Image (cartoon, rainbow, N blue to C red; front, side, top):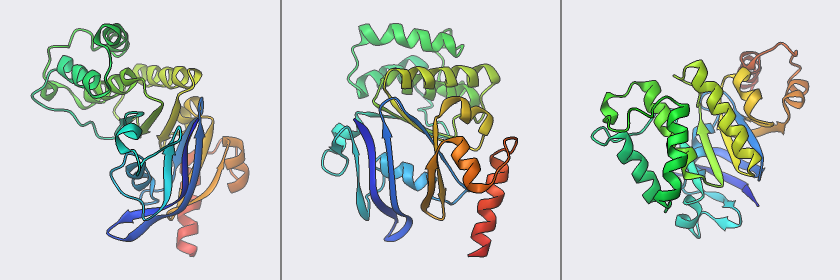
Length: 246
């Protein structure tokens, strides 16, 4: 069982942004997708979410092909976007009820888990708050709670640490580890190495729309000649230099 991206070429209005992407995330694995802005990370995510149709190639999740069974595919995916997307006139409770409805969750089983997550992110006393009154960080926590409540096979997480306080970051990392221990799959984009290396086991480096390497952090460092003390900033400098030399 796995997320398989095979020879994926895609983008917008016929112009390929990503070219011949091949990735596989097996159950129990968390993969970090890293690269410069404009490298194709967002385009890749949009294809996985079914927001863009591939120009070439195929995406499947647990043998369900996205273009053939889009509803069944999407039921297996939860998404935490970089910018929270909430309905301003709905309460937190209504957002969670919407998640339960969308993923066909039994409310009797889902609410105990929801309360655990709410308490973890200090939202348990805010069920009746309207989303419009939440700060950016609180909105991000609502997205996290909703995604982990859905209990899907695949979690797609885009720059999740932005706007979160240190306690929330630690709790999110704990949830990602818990998910992979339960044989879930995680695809995460991030620019923050310190948090990423606690949450993911492998990385895929995307540059100019193609995958340059997939491997462990040590393999990435060896490939690009990075020191153990170097952060992703040094890697981005190298990728930027590669682009300028082309």
